[in-house]
Amino acid sequence: MKIFMTLIITIILLALIGLTVIMFGLYNVSAMNPDTGIKKWILSTASDNSVERHAAGITGPPLDDSSMVVLGYTHYSEMCVTCHGAPGIEPSEIGQGLNPHPPNLARSTRDMSDGEIFWVTKNGIKMTGMPAFGKTHSDDKIWAIVAFVKKMQNMTAEQYNAYGKTAGNTEVMGQ
Image (cartoon, rainbow, N blue to C red; front, side):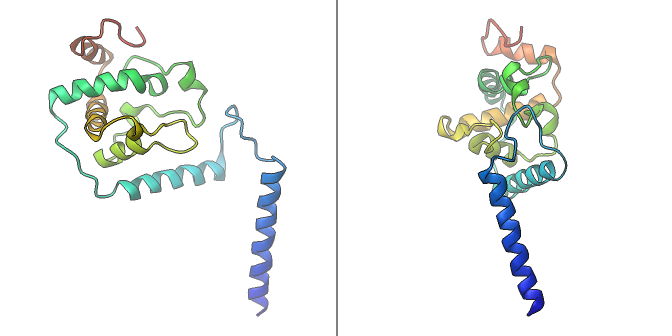
């Protein structure tokens, strides 16, 4: 009985501490102050595990169709390069000011399944600046973005710019 009461009192005290932090604005929400330590671990672990769980079982079309990759480039260059950059292109001032910092997708997606990249692109990630493109894009267009992101993992800046010319862009982002 004593252990049970100690547990209840501990839970109540933790809840009161949490409520105090929330109600008095003690947690600094400024994008200038990145989370570190346990806060960073909690947020990144929760995000990684959520994406893995919700993307489980998602399978898409073959991603090697060249017209699909070009369509993916078009959408990527219009919507993603601003925050995530691209081979030879740094993120814009907007992307540099986000917290958490948007990942370099050419590197960060190497360990992600196609389904995980699709799920993140379609659903976005709360409180990161990553929008849910599923509200504005069909699944086919999102799979095209996935195809391009997968192709971009081994792409040089020159190859990225060549996609711009193939897609008919006369002015490539960042140039």
